[in-house]
Amino acid sequence: MTPSTTGALSISDGRLALSALLILVNVGLSAALRLGLSRSLLLASVRMVVQLLLVGFVLEWLFHQDQAPLIVLVGAAMAMIAGVSAVQRTQHRFAGIYLNSLLSVMASSALVTGLAVSGLIQPQPWYNPQYLIPLLGMVLGNTLNGLSLGLDRFMEGLRSGRDQVETDLALGATRWEACQAVVRDAIRVAMIPTINSMMVMGLVSLPGMMTGQILQGAPPAAAVRYQIVILFMIASATALGVFAVVGLAYGRLTSADHQLRLDRLVRRHGGKRSVR
Amino acid sequence: MAPSGAGKTLLLRTLALLDPPQAGRFSLLGRAPAAWGLPRWRAMVAYLAQRPVAGGGTVETNLRAPWRFQERRRLAGWSHERITGWLAALGRDPSFLSYDAERLSGGELQQLALLRALQFDPTVLLLDEPTASLDGATTAAVEALLIAWLAAGPRACVLISHDGEQIERFATRTLELPR
Image 1: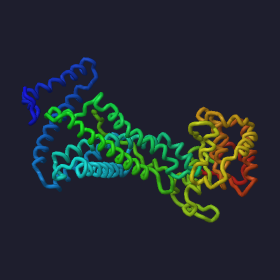
Image 2: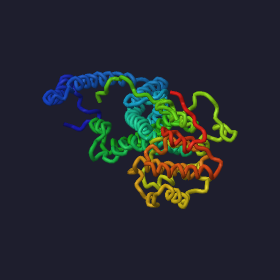
Image 3: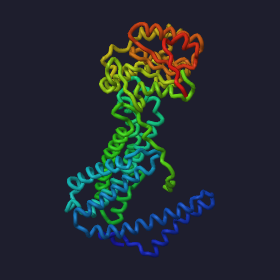
């Protein structure tokens, strides 16, 4: 086999179907141990296949477009989905939480991705979808986790630390003096996964994007450079997004009269259970 | 005094503006809370919760903590003599200051919370059953300490109690909330 520079070996339909048989390992295990996961596993598999095949078509179409507004619109739609998903896994809600999350996701990802395409990677033109969309996708996917963790931790922290916060307020603390420990803790927790993944990067995990580029025949040294840029983008976008979303939640759950407004918090009702 | 659930705690919390009042106006020394600024208002109208909480560290760490608040920095600051004087009045040794605050009993916590508020000499002290976890002797010591503190300046105290005798001993005016 000669090394290919034009792309990886293509996978035929038959072999694709064959790969789906691998999920039977999980189904078999679930049946044998009565884990009750068979349904979720099958549903998740079907969703994964359908979503990815569809995305394949959409991207094929999108990469042939060259109108900046259209591509930016697609990027904004991706950011909206990320903003909404970040709220899905929190245990409590408050009015405006979706707007807070959307604003935080959009501002942080637009800023960081904008910096990447205008300065760090410089595709021609800057909105070249082959670069912009995957970069944005990676940033959004990771920011979303940070936001979700940060929001949840902040709300639960205020709930469990309520007596301490109100004791400080009653002793003459400003709302910031009373809440800053909870704010700090939420931001710290939200950043842990990003820091952990950078720590073991390349040692324990080979990131998907880098693996993809290498399979495509790109020199590993070049693929590694992309990965470094991406990881710095992810780290800064997550930090910015988490800072914004926790800050906005702090503004919402305290008042200008330096009161703790946990009455604005409601437990999420109903909601289907996550299969993730 | 009032039956359980009548809203005694809510009344005190609202006076400290920890909960927003539904209607009505507050003022202290002729100025509204907004004119004082809320942290200043709460420095003057000190509310002590029925079940006080303490953070990590020793009793002394907890007594010193509020001195770091912006609102308190302009004041004279921590006074060891004053605190040990009050501790003596409560029949306690100065070694109480080095106890681990997270291991205090309910009664010890109430005494910590009382001293934590008293050291700032608030104009109005709002006490929510401050002696509920104390024995008879300590209750008497707390009452004596409060009466002495009240006499030392233009100060007032609002006290919630279920103990009719305590109200007889302590109160100059009594408000009974209907259920």
